[in-house]
Length: 219
Image 1 (spheres, one colour):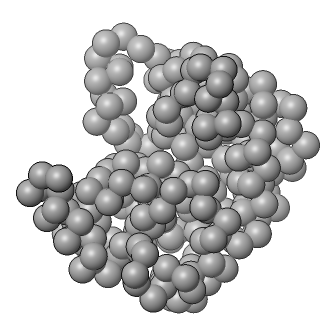
Image 2 (spheres, rainbow, N blue to C red):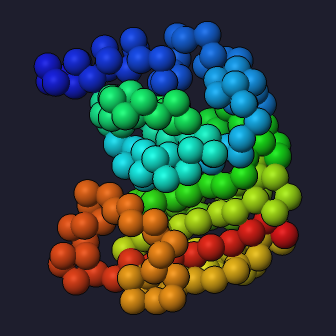
């Protein structure tokens, strides 16, 4: 492990806005994000597989009336987002270091208002469908975490994942697709990305990839 990674892990361990194994809230937070961490009753929004938390931070800056949680297993990535959130005094931003497969341990039914997936790994091989974050099993779990009328958003550069997700959301008894586009920046939905681009999204766009976008509601 590199020295830089070790420093990031140390930062996460000490950071008040990072919830991870070994900290008291790690086993207490399920169903209590508003009361135990944010100490308000604002809507709770989660970005799954948040990486460095660029979207979590970007949305947190624009919507101070909402609470944002970036969830990722990579501690060194979360540490970067944690530092930026701390420097910007974003008290409405937190990070959870855990794998998405363990989300049931951290989110209660009807606890969330929005879930965002930003450029997840499309997992294009058939044998890896169980890892796709929009497969029917994951979608069913998201629907449980979301309040009635809660929103699910997907942004991806992958045509494969976009089409797969449209199919699975259409088949879902829990979600209704509101809008979608295969070219977000050239569509009437352009403003819905709120001017937030991740590092990799900027690279994708510079190479000529279009950004796909799906917005669905718990029905």
